[in-house]
Length: 173
Image 1: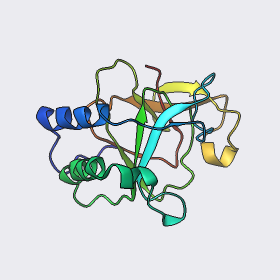
Image 2: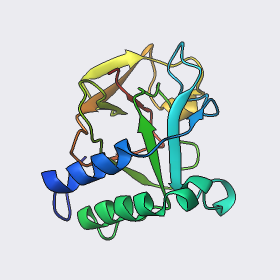
Image 3: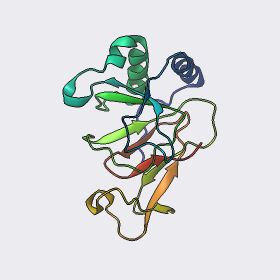
């Protein structure tokens, strides 16, 4: 379920990334309606790297130093892990969703001073059940019944691999 090639990030490295992220203004957007928590109309989020139709995001051009630092962090952890973009979210717990455009595994890590915010990942063998979402077709959920099973992973300062084509969410902070 988890793969840990490469070296784990050290505290100084993550502190530097956290400092860089805290100094970066993330756009406020309402465009990611499939992940917005209930009752929330806007979230702070940005994508580094390629976005729709292979275009490089404006945020990448505006923040090349952040892009270089985050790519280097991921490469030090797993030099062979293929990715084309990095999603940055600030202070919001994305609701249950499936990533529509993913081609394979995702690699997640969080930095900051917070409680909660763990990553719930759909897992047929998992022990943490959540109510089945009503806004997704059955073929995306891949489990029957009123509840879906998964596991909760603490991603604060810790890398976790998961399949974004399966249900996942960020638990409340």
